[in-house]
Image (cartoon, rainbow, N blue to C red; front, side, top):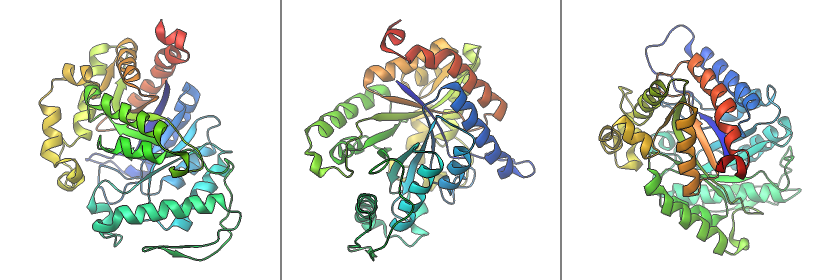
Length: 360
C-alpha cells in the first residue's frame, strides 16, 4: 500500500487577511512534511472558478514550487483538464515539471467534474469527451515523437513542431484518470491507465468496480492502451484526519468529509455535484450516516493511528493500491494537518511498508 496526500486548496469563509497567500504557503509546507513522513505521492487537482471549494487553478505552478522543496515524493496532477487546455501546453507543462522534479511526475487526466468549469472556456459539453480523447492522443504523440509530426482531428489542428522540453521519464510519466463514478473504472482499465477514485462511494460499492478495472486492464490488447505502457494501479482519495485521541480524529475527519461533500454554505454547491446526481443526493448520502457509519463504510478515515490503519486495511483488501488522504479540507487548520501528517508518517505508513508488517 502506498500513501498519497491530496489538496485542491479549499478556503472556507470567513477569511482573514491575505488568505490565498497563507493557503499556498501552507500547501507547500504540507507537501514538505509529507515528503519527510514517507508519503509516496502529493496530488493537486485543477479547479476553476470554485470559490471556497478549490483555489488550485494552476497545479503545475504549485507543483513546480514543491518540486524544489522536496526530494522523494512523487508529484501528481489529479487531474489536468484535457478539455480546456491546449495539447501543446499540456505536454510542455508536464515535461517541464518532470525535468524540475528529476522524473517524479504522475500525469492524471480528466474532463472536468461539472459544466460550470468547462463552459467558461467555450467547450461544448456534448463534444467534451471526444475533445478530451483527441487532446490525450495528441499529447501521447508529442511524447512519443522526437519531433511532433502534427495532429488533425475534429477539435484540434496542430502543426508539426519540436515540443520541448522532453520529459525525464521516457516515453512519458505514469498515466492516470479520475473516476468520480464507478462506471469509469472499467473504462480506465481498457485505456491501460491508473484510476483515482473517491470514497464518496463506500468500500462495498467500490469493490466490484476495482475488480472490473483489473479484469479490463489485464484482458485489453496493449496496442489499445492510451499510453506506451500500462499503469495498473488503483488509488482512492478519502477525507481523513489522524489524532492521538480516537474520538477527536473520527469527529474531525467526518466533519471535513461532510463539508467537502456539500454540507456547507458554499454558493456553487448546486453546480458542483451536477454529474453526481445533484448536491442533495451527495449531501443526503452523508447525512443519512452517523460518524461511526462513515468510518465503517470507509467514506471517511479518521481516528487514532490504530483506527486509521484498520480503515486503510479494509480498502487494501478491496483492492486499493494507494490510499490518498485529503487532510486540507473543510475547517481543518494548518497545525492540525501538519500534526496529522506526522502521526500518519510515524504510526500508519510503517505498518504497510511490507506485506509482513501489514499482516502484523
